[in-house]
Length: 109
View 1 (cartoon, rainbow, N blue to C red):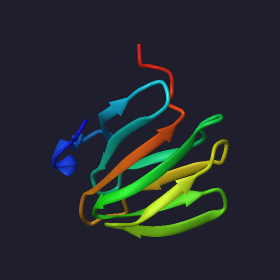
View 2 (view 1 turned 180 degrees about the vertical axis):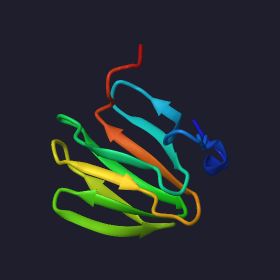
View 3 (view 1 turned 120 degrees about the vertical axis):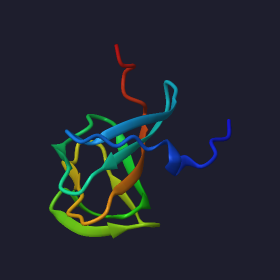
View 4 (view 1 turned 90 degrees about the horizontal axis):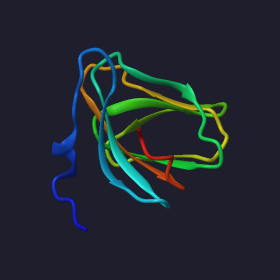
């Protein structure tokens, strides 16, 4: 499977972070999170699942456990299983982040 022009698949929403699925199997999930300025993904954890954030476009602020840092295009952040993490877009531009989670979360119903 080849996915071309991944960034163009981002779906922005006015009311909250936008999501677009790229790939899902029993072992792996990949998707896009798209943030307008001021939007955020609240602190949360993934039980027994690791998560990778790859910034495709823009700048954001990521918190993983006790560490908070600015991340920008080309940066990668790793959130180990069971560690609280969050991501926000302080602005002024848009933010597009590819996420990869393994093992994959249960299918959406």
